[in-house]
Image (tube, rainbow over all chains, first blue to last red; front, side, top):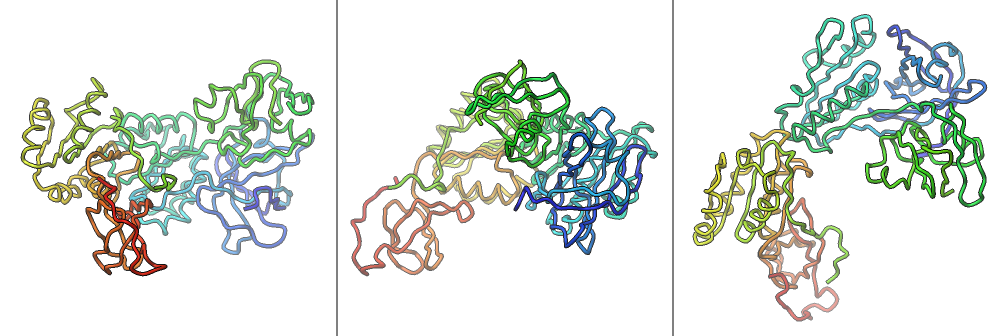
Length: 318
Length: 201
């Protein structure tokens, strides 16, 4: 797979699904798009001046003629502007670049039962899963929590994809909450759970899994962290002594790319591990979901897509 | 013999996982010592109230083991003089377990992988299961030529129970087939065999 493959697309349709979520249909300018497996994401490059945004989004579906992908984006006012650019600047006909889809969140085909849990816009990979579900040997059920019916823009598309007796809705405004611990209690051997949603929901699934004795390998989750701002620092290149100034709203990965360093990346959200970079000196401020606790405590590695520096300077083994 | 074959099982002592909500401990012959050691190491973390026991051995072995397990209050405990009866009972046992289940099994190598295969078929996740080889290292071998299985092999070379070819016991181990791989040792010069020695005791 060519992870750096750049696919030029244009926006052929935009739907306002909820007050804060828009669905975008991205159509290839020429040729057919690569197939995707349920749970895949793609990285959208937005040439918003003065800086480019590169954000990962789950693929909801591909058109039968393989000309278009559908993605959905929640407008995040506290983010760094990528989602706001997509919501406020992008219109039908706008041109964008995307990467080929890559899957960090696949279904586990031997599972006997798949429990899919989604919150808000986290339903997008779950919808992607539905494409693969007919090929799975196990049964499945979908649990979808959203704030209220006003935020139920995915309800109808979900109902079209998922059998009614397998689909469960939860509604915060009406006090109909998903009891994750109850759901995960007494599930038969061979069950796998998949969750995508707000951090609190993902943590609730991870905590319930620990409390109820689930093996870690049967608990799947996807969380992309958008890069959050932090205080500026200097990244020093060990081999040359070059000093790169990382500004407060810029990620270390972006600063390195700006300085012509070709760092491998995939998700740009602290999940995939491709951009893992060795640290020679300085203390990283870890914000990723990839490194394990030991690696984080060692201060020998950093994920430059989301993590920053605790002091003024960090020296990288580049 | 090379130990670089990655499929050859390497056993580490059973380690009690206190996250489990319900446990099954299975032991045969010397394997029971491994279970006892695990219980001792776990100390207060070990919870007999959520632990079932199935032990197989000779009448003498069982007589010496019983007091250790009868002193605690296990919800289910059973002793077997026929190890195959124990193995055959596992599927119906596993079918009642949920995702909080943990399975521990210790004993001679052929036995533990028979039990592990039952667990895998019942969809026990590899992270819910631990096995430790104790006692006989006699091997089951699968013939790469005819596919037949030959059990209880203790020598480096054995006649295949299916096709009769003399098989060299290689270290490649198939968890799916629960057997080591054996291939014809005298393919170059039929009839010329290396010395047959007992190596898997």
